[in-house]
Length: 63
Image (cartoon, rainbow, N blue to C red; front, top):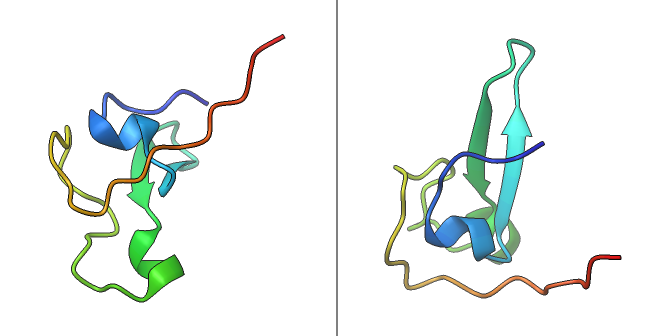
């Protein structure tokens, strides 16, 4: 499921793309849940161009 145009979130280790039953997709930030840091919004306003909690996602080679 491709995510929305989320800027920096699209390449962040903490992003999870979630969908609903009507076909909409959302970019969810899991940083607060995983680290206990509450200053990060669960569903940030998009696109995100700056974020102090950004960590690059591991890239896996495509075959």
